[in-house]
Image (tube, rainbow, N blue to C red; front, side, top):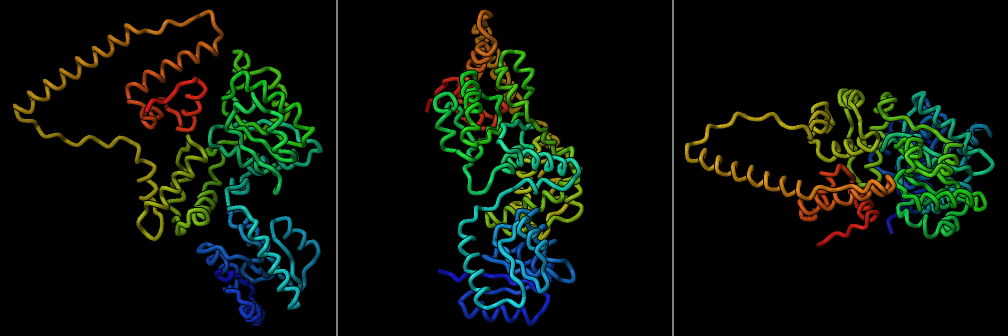
Length: 452
């Protein structure tokens, strides 16, 4: 097994070299950083197994660096703070931010080795790095969102709550913010479980969180199951968090959403702001997403120049946080220079726009005749298909509930286009304007089988 890598960050050369000698004698690989800037650069290139971080440094203190790593999703390894004149308040603050432990200088040999050993065991249990609520930014609107979530998290009983915002806005990050480490987390995707086994869901998530990303997608039976689950959740100390981008009161008025369920969810609800409402956070978000790619995909870290960051900040984001994430990953994978530039950003942001038509050469007489024959045949075929479609016009049943009528139309719509694209799910998703996962869920909901 490869030896573990420890990063020692201290502005005093004597302490750095002493810790290096001790740890190397124990078989560890050791890297040294004399200040926060050096430690920051090393962390961007790799993930140490442990960091020993001095609190008092001239350029940037250890607490500030610890916060920076936490905010940028880089606090994915145990960090042990060190100080020659630390206080209890400083130790408590460091622990609250995410430090694993606190060592006072001069550090006793046995205390050092025991702390390093404990930190290594803890490191093996740490989850993979991921975006978190801190990654969303520091703007006033996001800070207020965090404060409200903190207040909800401190409530005695885990009340159900509703997160309202556009698709891709980061509702899952808010739900995970309410989740306690070590407790169960379930993002429910098989909604039929709500209808068939709501109590089993609670038994599996006792003291944890159940998250439903779009509650408007539930049918009436699943809504009844969710209502039962919520009413029993307090007994299991389970918090139920639902997200939606739909107007639930409007759906309820149309008899598409359960009145009692809406009342329960509306008791504690928060609006998650769209990315366009806090564009000042985009530069920090870009860095956090780029760092995350280094962690998860082992992709080399790419720096964005100022013009590139400004262009991303000023762009429109109809797909919200999910779209920004996709664009950043695209830029990291496809840009050629050492830095990601304004031209790179323009290339990716405009890649789905139709290119300007190039001047066409005048066809020869023979080619023109062939084109005319082909076009006439194509027009005739289109007319025949349109005529056939007219002969098969759907006759709605006005005596059934609106939900059933809508399901009937969606079923015929999807079956029609499935036939046209020969069951190609990618093309069908593009035509229907749905994500693939949403499309498969819709097929299952409408009992449509995919023919191979």
